[in-house]
Amino acid sequence: MCRQVVGNKKGYLTIDKEYGGLEHYLSWLIFERGGSGNGIIFVKNNRIIKFKKDIDLSVEEIAKDLRKIDYDYALFHTRLATVGSVCRSNVHPFVFSPTFSLAMNGGEDCNTLDTENKRPDMTDAELIARVMFETNSHPKEFLDKHTKGGAYTGIYNGKPYVYTHNKDIMMLLKKDDAFLFSSDFPWQYYGKNIYTFDFKDSLYWEEGMKLPTNIRETFDAKKLINGPYKNNILSDVIKEHPEYKEIIKRIFYQFDKEVDTAETIYALNKGIKQEDIDRNIHVKTLFRL
Image (cartoon, rainbow, N blue to C red):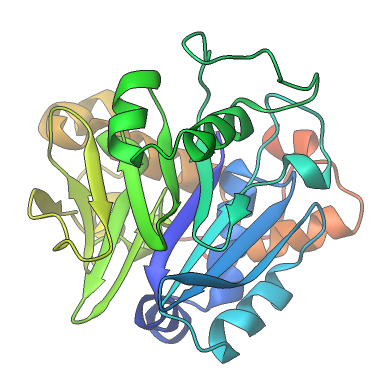
């Protein structure tokens, strides 16, 4: 799994001003399901005006661009390598023209796609992006036909879009005219204009469409952690809130790790390995309750 975000500039600035800062938010996404490379696209007037990706592209550089560049939308992705080596060419997003790009979370077997020209180290995401671009296919029609799981973001004919098979791997920050689709948010944010989706099939949104109406506001995670379930086992909480099963699991997973990701990125830069952090080796937290 990876982590990705699609939002307008007001959405990113809202994160910066009201939700702990862009550096912390991006660092948290990288810690959760990233670390193998970061990429970002800036879109203005339905064209990609700036594109950066690399295995060591820093959150500080990305945050600086998010604040200063004049853009309509920005698409961020952090990769957790599952297919293909850790190298710049395998970092998302995959951009094939000023009006086309694709990034994804999850994995696909790609059995329905022509793999004749697939290079040995090509990721499933790049193959999907390449075939979609070469056939000039609409994202929803193509992804409905050729994919079974995961979440996708990209640019098609200059329009940003979001597609997901799974309502539990994309969420929405919506406040006034500011919005962000995100793979996840730190649990401290839940209850503050953060929404989860309610749908049976796939979700598709692109620029020009209204934001989805099949959304519901999440509960306040701090109240959940500090409230009547503080000493209860996870199954009791899920029994009380079955509609939020996957989100509750994620909140408790984040809470139990007792890790603040800004400190974690610092630890990684000091040489602590990601796998050691994943084994719950202690890293100082700024949010311990």
